[in-house]
Image 1 (tube, rainbow, N blue to C red):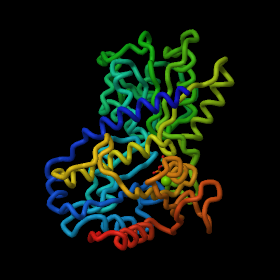
Image 2: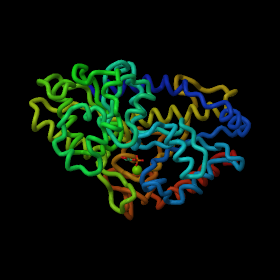
Image 3: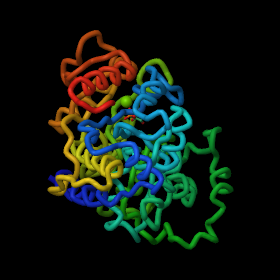
Image 4: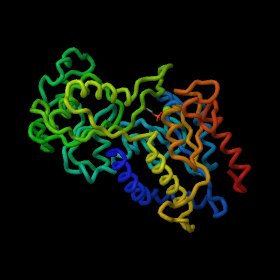
Length: 390
Ligand code: G3P
Ligand code: MG
């Protein structure tokens, strides 16, 4: 119930925010020059990243050439698409730059939706409160960019408490001394006093790095109402960017994801605490993510045709088909199924799913080998049903 209410509120404000997104002027101009009225696309595409377009940092499945087909000869976007990943750990602008480099096409930050992107809808609630951001990459920078003012990464937060991780002396990869010199800010950092300011919210932004230390420190924060080492208190809200049990990275078989970490934390917390862990997970397969993606794609089309009348009704451009190309049946295909029309799911065999036929539990509308094959199918289908020159 709590989850549903939070998601409904987030969906309402996401719809509002997405209508405000404005592409840079040059982006807008190039779109509008390219598209006369008759060619307004009736379809859009959402790409999963890990296991569909990348494995680690390596492009897979012919992704660079497949994506290039969505641009005109002059490099301007021809078909509205975005990346819909449960991954993250860096800001959307940094991720857009990285994807542009790896895939060889220009990706705008508005085309990047990460697992933690919906966290920005919670700024009003936590703007001036102390929050802790967990995960690989730059979780605190991500949250600060969203507008949260008092953010500490779990690394920094833990570094203020001597002996909070009794195993840290055995961890050769990062010692407490290194963390101290990294932050070197105990005296000069006036943002908060971690010994008296309670942590009011915990955000798992990306895959946690040091599971043992993080589970220990999170149990401390969550059990004590935000003051490690003190008496028990009311659990502060805990948010996960996604709940992927496994995902496809560079290693040949699947890796444990944020959902696996959540299970670990939950089992341990419930064993050491009298009331069960409360949490909210965002990311696919949450239908909210797909509604939000639809609103963003609609906004992209609006930027391509700024002078045209749109059937507004609060939703902007109406799509006949929105394609979700994913590798994980439980997450990508399940999400598209839950979201319903106009979503059409395409499952690739380059990641978590390796089956010969379709997934039995969450069957996709179409199964293909690679993302290149998926794009080929989409463009052939859309070309034959539309008079426009896609
Ligand atoms: O950590 C990344 C992972 O959980 C999934 O990423 O792109 O497959 O949604 P993606
Ligand atoms: Mg994936």
